[in-house]
Image (cartoon, rainbow, N blue to C red; front, side, top):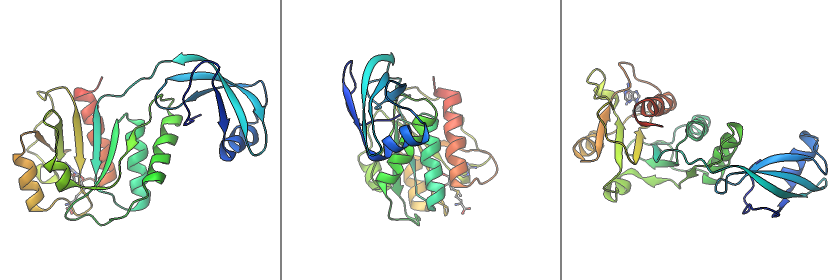
Length: 232
Ligand code: SAM
């Protein structure tokens, strides 16, 4: 179970109504039962139910069972698409171990509004699902052009460019270190964006094969390719 509070031996964790409903109503736990909890920062802890009620309850931390496992320093930048597909991208990025998920607006982005809190909740759920001890941060929507203006010197960018199909520059000789993957919107990137991205010193242009993939498929394919070449 994900909890927001600090974790430590003897630490008590008050539960919110929804968490209590899940643990005591759905999972049928009661006082004295034990479960694993994490907050994305302090590893995984064994905890005991010390109070169980319909609207709340309390857990007490017993001992740490796993250290925090930080995923590789990989960001996923993507232009939001339809709601369900955006949810999918965030969920898969969290499962596959992105450290940060950054929705960006581009020249052809069709969705300019985004509920960051909802996407963050999806990332938490995905981390819970795959037994992670870490939850990636979902950043607020930001402009790609602004991000590129302030791009950190040491971070490589895997620019997934569907117009490069066949001219595949692999990641085999790519450097290790901090990375970001960039996936465009349904309409792809504008010529101006593509020109700027191609000449940037931190960019590695990558094709994901000869077919044009939907953005959500492209995000998963790109993360898989990156993991195979540079992940640990
Ligand atoms: N502009 C394209 C069009 O309308 O024909 C479609 C863009 S595609 C649906 C969305 C994004 O997925 C692209 O901007 C790119 O980042 C990524 N993508 C899809 N297929 C790709 C491929 N074969 N190689 C590299 N990137 C790809």
